[in-house]
Length: 176
Image (spheres, one colour):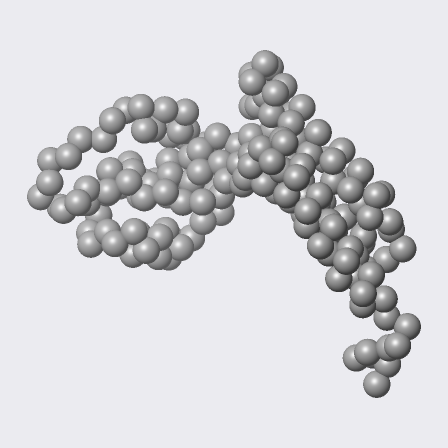
């Protein structure tokens, strides 16, 4: 029965620690900004995983709340510094971030881009259904975003003559 509950378990410490870490994360996020938990780049993903790991080890091991808080603050500071450096040094942004990739150009599926992105045609079709696209003629473009999300840009109806602004596809790679 000890594997379910032990009288030695520090349940009160865990509850208080959870509340304290929660407050620390909210406080630091308010200072640094929501960008710190956004899903933009590979380093954003790594940061989110690292924060989760720190919180977990702080709450379930002998790591002190102060130690966990300092580690979280350090990671948030690094995120702040990296986002600043990306604005100042464009080559760093290129190194860290993936550029979006075009998967469909109008009603034409770009098979080489799908293959490069390791996305199956069935996955693309599922995204089209999610976006309520009724046929390929409704599609302006489908983009694999730098976050890993797939954006479907479509007309409201297949007979619609809506034009897609070229600014919408600014920075999107047409070839891998």
